[in-house]
Length: 171
Image 1 (tube, rainbow, N blue to C red):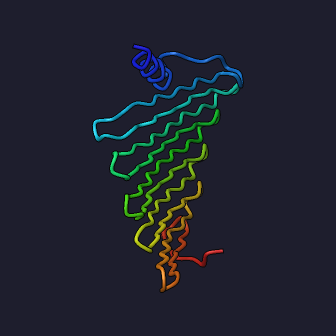
Image 2 (image 1 turned 180 degrees about the vertical axis):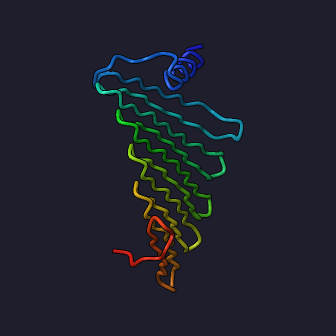
């Protein structure tokens, strides 16, 4: 019953159905630990907060094992500022019983004046990649990609354009 109440309360706060006091102490946290159907354990935790000027943040993470030595951790966070800027981040990391590990993550942010950035990345099996796209409020943009491979080094490509779409030097 308590677990269900926490989920309902947290969901209501995230959806804006319940507001927290508009001060730095407007914070709600919770966590749950239980045995899962895979024979392992799952631990989930989250928090939401609202600042004195209207900014707010919500974050959560979950760690699950399967009883075979494999584990996965997922996390997410969202925030918005009082002037309209937003950020959204997600990631997942997995480790197998053999020791192999992988990670995937992304972040998207938008400024109150229209600028934005999106970046995604992954790593595993000796290779890591990251792709990033940035657009300024005036329409200038950057698009780039980096790959690092064990034993081969790093490769990076990047292109900058002005508001008209013409390629310009990246500074």
